[in-house]
Image (cartoon, rainbow, N blue to C red):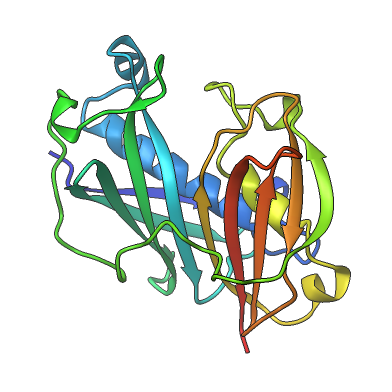
Length: 244
């Protein structure tokens, strides 16, 4: 049984930003791909999951990068399950380059859901064996990202369209990173280096949903982002962490 899975990926031009660095949304997509491949390697295909009426829902994710991979650079993403705690599953990642240099680490929390009722299922209802590796890359994540009392102003609004919708019918998890970085101004994008990204998903965004993206000023080298509907539904909250 494959306790750990390693996915090798070479950054393509479509993954890179205007500076030639891998976009954070592409990094999130690569992490998602590695998790999917690991589950498949355990003999649990996506089709079989759908047949069982089950799916995985990402709750929160924290990604810390020592260095962002560049266009055409090859990276290895190692991932493993830390098992379930309560109703939630925990999965960690380690990212290295072909020379073994540590590029970054990530922690994530998932829920097993009934894809018809959109209801969280108990881990005991998962009819497959998932090997557990008792190894952690950092402290456990908490769902709250925004500190109490943080001041936010509207940056822009975004209408969810065809380009962001995935096979589950909602805005793809990785695309939220683009929404967050689109809230930064030109100087923030060009100066300094982003070393961390944290996001918690509160409510699924579907086709034609309108999202109001709000942001804070930079506080302690961190910009906080919130996505809501005009009526106040909280879609997500996130944090972009920069080097001092």
